Amino acid sequence: MSVVQENPAVPIPVEIGGVRAGPPRSQILRRDTWWFWPGVQALGLLAFVGYGIWTAFRGDFYYAGTMGHVSSLPSHYLSPFYSPCFVSSCPTDAVWGPAGGIGTVSPALLVLIFPMGFRVTCYYYRKTYYRSFWASPPACAVADVGSTQPGGMRSKYSGETRFPLILQNAHRYFWYVAVIFAGILTWDAIEAFRFGSGWGMGLGTLIFVVNAVLIWMYTAGCHACRHLCGGGLRRFSNAPVRHTIWRRIVTPLNEHHQLYAWMSLIWIAWTDLYVYLVATNTIHDPRFF
Amino acid sequence: MAVGTSQTEGPSGAPSPASAGEHGTASGETLHMQLWRGDKDGGQFVEYQVPAQEGEVVLDVVHRIQASHAPDLAVRWNCKAGKCGSCSAEINGVPALMCMTRMSTLDTASPITVSPMRTFPVLRDLVTDVSFNFEVAKLIPSFTPAPPPPGGYRMQQVDVERGQEFRKCIECFLCQNVCHVIRDHEENKAHYAGPRFFVRLAELEMHPLDTLDRRAYVRERMGVGYCNITKCCTEVCPEGIHITDNAIIPLKERVVDSRYDPVAWLGRKILRRPAPMTAAEAAAHTSAATRGVSDAAR
Image (cartoon, rainbow over all chains, first blue to last red; front, side):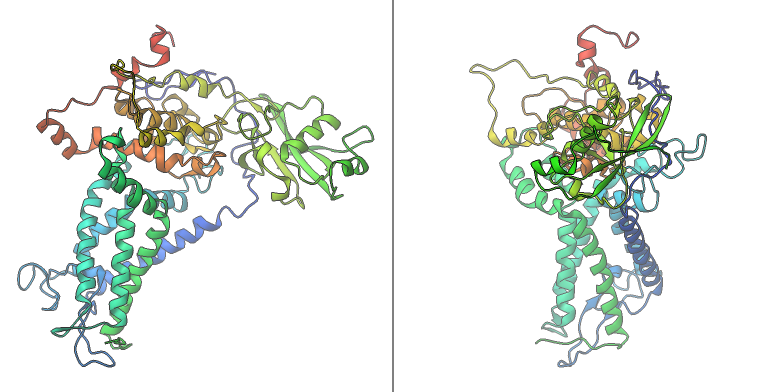
């Protein structure tokens, strides 16, 4: 059987050999719980999106300048959802940029678009949501949903070759911005050591430090970073420094990119929740010194 | 599930429990094997019941069925060591090598299905026509080194090591089979090379002595943009090649360099670097082209 050439400009002239036959494609022969992890991941992402929407539109209690149990000095905890805070409603101690800030909209709505863009175009998250939400495919060797209905909306597949999915190629630009954000969150972690005009350490400080570390591990393990650091080279021996960075730092992080993607996602929500609980005086921030 | 006739091992069949004992410990359990029987005109699962033997792989059981019940059963195999890539099939719906799938890893309480690879046309029973892959292979722009310098070619160890992973490929085509781009969308075979050939292209693009620039070709003719990196190819690879992370994504990033990154484009202009090679220029280096076969003739 000759393949129908959908795109005559770029044909691969192949004689495929005959009808495929075999078991019908709509029949799922897998016996394992192939739906379990895509389901768990879908629930995890939905939970984060739900939490993110709530916290972004909340517009308050994102800065904990409150007293702790053993210290009368206020903390400087700024939620990562609202950092950098540069609108007029930002607390004086937390505002970035021009004095008084700009605009009155919830700062999170201005900030989140960049880390969101980084995660949405991330190669790992793409795998996750293509499986869990697009069902393309829902699992390996399970047919794309809708693909078995001839003439149906999903009977054709163009992958990431057309708008809007071709925009996934902008991932490296979101990575550039993500590096800046990782720097900002690192600064916030340093600020979390500040109590009043002096220095100290509370449970919140630890949470902020872990948050910054996880964000760096996720950002530095990015596939685009791996390419830019050295993966794009044809000859490693011509660039020993880049090869060392690629081999010793970025590739080991990249091997666990999925793990760091989830850990950093969960921890950033937990950091925000902790700030919220402290800011609303629901809990007191334990101070170590 | 369409299940045809059920056949139980007869007196002239494969090893009896007694003879099985000579090969080791027989569990005495009965295996319910459902093998796909048919050709291009259709087929069905046929159930065979055979006694279990310790230490077997799926291919062993299929061979016993072939010896005892179904001498006309078509099954492709060769090395029985996971190195020839011949016995690719789908076991309980999961693409795998029959010779590398231990029966002890399967739930034998319920029937075990063995079916041919779905992406390729069935010739007969478990044997498929994988010639699509050989046709695509002819379209890969070949290794093209510069003329050797005085003293011959030199390669550093770090550059040699990088390609070793890709050369582990045994061409079992399980990655091609599981890739939904062609598994679920037959029409994409016309403009999509598949994971196995992205591995080959990545190996060439990372070769320190190669001089071709295949990036435009990878995008336009090999269709790397169709891949949505759901990593199934990596999951089924019996050689453990990190197909997605080490081959496909690096290729996608190289395509971004040459096509979608305005900063890279500006850098090439400012530094007066050569423009990326066109797909047509790269196509001139395919084996089909170098043998003088025109596009139209192909």
